[in-house]
Amino acid sequence: MLAISEYREVFLKYLKEKITIKEPANLYEPMVYILGLGGKRLRPVLVLMATEIFDKDYKKALDASLAIEIFHN
Image (cartoon, rainbow, N blue to C red; front, side, top):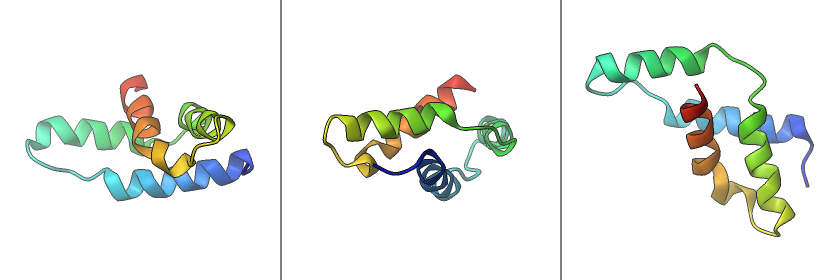
């Protein structure tokens, strides 16, 4: 199991890859803005950690962790 900071770095890298401004811009720009503000990103980290607790590859839960972070904000 990775350290919390390592899970956070993995998630932040994934977040940067996935979050881009698309069309319609008035829908995506606020989402990109809010997610770009930063934060601890504890919720997605907990999703990744829980995945490993159940002996699964945490990388398969990156989409779920992103969904948790988007819907939380």
